[in-house]
Length: 318
Ligand code: RIB
Ligand code: CA
Image 1 (cartoon, helix red, strand yellow):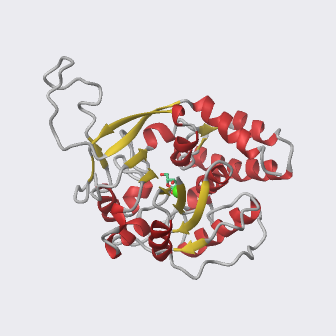
Image 2: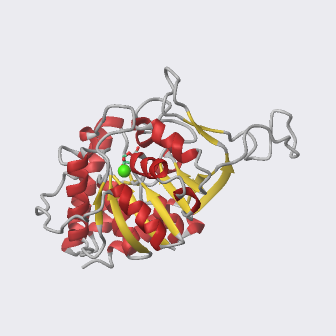
């Protein structure tokens, strides 16, 4: 399989790139608005590949605003640069001449087993699907961090990546492409506390210390804003599923994107009624109702196993 990483670096998007690069073939990175402006998320993607010595991976700049909404950023979590915590050098690695949409389409022709790992708002992916209606038939799958089986973060019902651009999410979730969804119900469990950060720092390399300092900035903000004890490493789960699939429990179900609810716009409405084999009729022979499953949704995670994978991978960097 070949992987294209589309995201809005962002501390956890950064970890997704660093984790993926040591385990799978990353053919491109595309950037999108989200945690910060497109300009800043693109600078941060370039900083990340330089930090990891990954300059061979092309980076293509994407769309700077949602399909309908006005842009909304998250400086309260990721800081004014979108990757605060350590002053990384201004990047010199050049950007691809292609736009993100052109890169997605080009890579889908280059590789017949292309997986898109989407860790930001789905604007680029949705735009590519609209510009090239044959794209959906060429993608192997999309693995995305977004949504939730339960609670939201941007609103009580909606998670940031979906909430920022629900129209884009609706295009992706109705595309027919095989989907894996890693929502807050599991990603909040992948919480890097001081213990996990000390474990990373104890790797003893300048690289590990830099990562620990960056993630500590992110952790401290999540504690301040949401009262969380750990830095939710949301995004890396969307690639970890391909490296160590046994870390996750997935359930097929229908996921629909709420576009019109006054309180629920941006919610991933997950039809989990039958995932347990039960239904309102009771008993194991549930009469399956509702729309057919369009997504494998993560409902469980081996948190210790995930941090073993992450820490072991970070140890591979000098
Ligand atoms: O809600 C969490 C998601 O929003 C993560 O992808 C984080 O990086 C931000 O994009
Ligand atoms: Ca992200």
